[in-house]
Image 1 (cartoon, rainbow, N blue to C red):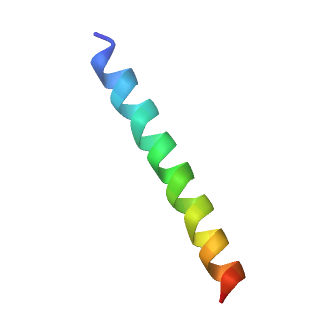
Image 2: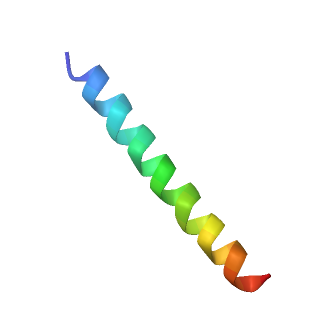
Length: 29
């Protein structure tokens, strides 16, 4: 039952990480 919630949490964490990486990359350009 909790698999769906876990997958959503994982996706959100991934999106957050990607967003942070993009911001850092843009700053270093």
